[in-house]
Length: 126
Image (cartoon, rainbow, N blue to C red; front, side, top):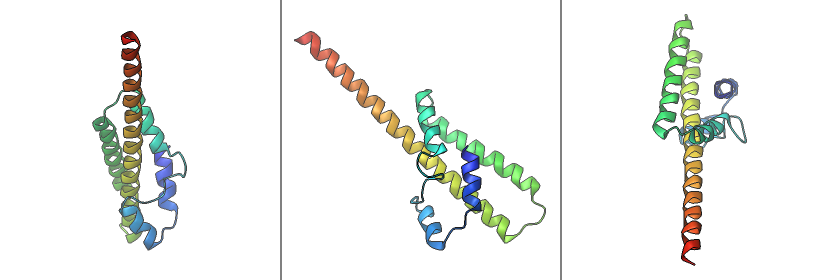
């Protein structure tokens, strides 16, 4: 799903303003609404992955795709370089979305744990 969203993003025309906004991390979600990358972050946090492991997944995904892609390029054109730039921007955006969702979910889980502990500790004292 993440690669499908990235491929769709690459195929979508982009203005120079949109390009600038994305380079600053202010681009729209890859697929609008709940993105595959956001869902990925939530699922990884629920599964007990660390943020370092989530980041490593994106690093491996980027390296694998670029290696396969470079083997397929027979004629280097400006368009192929632009596509690779767009791919890298989209991977960075997906990583950011995933990391943000992971961190948000971890914070909510921590808050819930403290709330439960606080409640359970108060009850025996009364």
